[in-house]
Length: 198
Image (cartoon, rainbow, N blue to C red; front, side, top):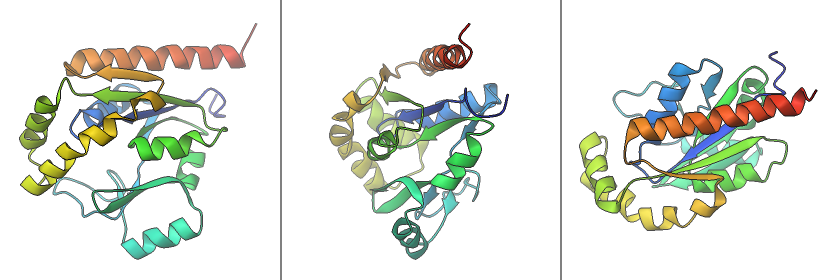
């Protein structure tokens, strides 16, 4: 155990406000084998965010240097800020843990190019656009301009659902979480069976 051979990588993507961060945290709380891949970002921390726990907050210049040095598995520019997944972080984590990525479709496309990564790609959708807007306003983390921007990006985001292995509608958080749990457990099982075929 702990050699990484049975460990899986789960990508959770969704339009902003569809609930992926909440579900990601629920999975990590219940399954101690799962670690969330902590991205690097150039955006400013929100009041409740901790550097190194929610994100690694770095400057634009530092981020560009990491791009130039080829240090990222994936990176994307979203709403004028960069987000990226550092190769060394993932390569270390996967040796002892399963990993969850809370990334968007751009990052998923880039990660999918690395055939050495065992990826399970799940895409979450809100029940409809109006519900998405309600959630963005309710969570009260963004300025009205940002809410509008995130809401408008929905149509572009949704076009990419076909890049994923599973597409779920999050109309009930508990149901959606249970579906994701089943997907993870069945993939975890098949990953163990592949390694220990009798």
